[in-house]
Image 1: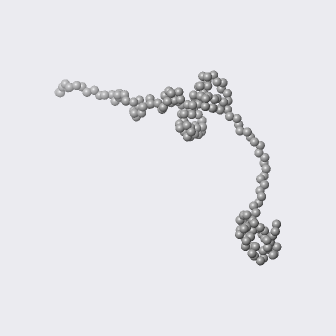
Image 2: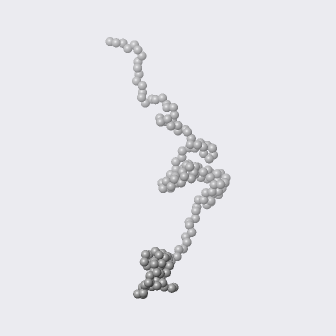
Image 3: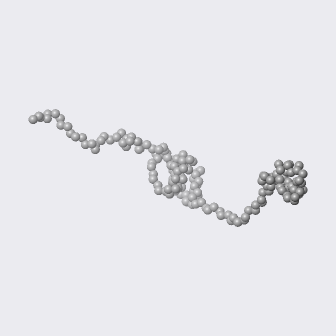
Length: 167
């Protein structure tokens, strides 16, 4: 028999760890704020439920115009709170400083449209090649009358069987 005179080894519980240096295992610092808000305080995460198509379209416009989705929403929230605190009567238009928010837009004026058929004047084309403009009419000795463009008119003026018709 051997006697165990050394210190006993205990099995460590694998579930107990030393706390990580940051809030998460991935070393991401969750307490970092995303800048300061319009009133100078750190920004916090907020969730809202909105129409899915509206969100998709708003996100594109907000990033292009304001640089982020947060800025226009934060501006709107500040306007609503400022108006409520100053005792503004919430009507159709809210105006605070340079921020103007119009909420109930009227429908577009519906103009009456007359159903009139457009009058189309047929384009006069050269009877020989179909080009425009026509510069003159020519009569053949057999009685046939044709319209001619500049090129064909110059050719027919020198032809013995074609005579220019005066109009």
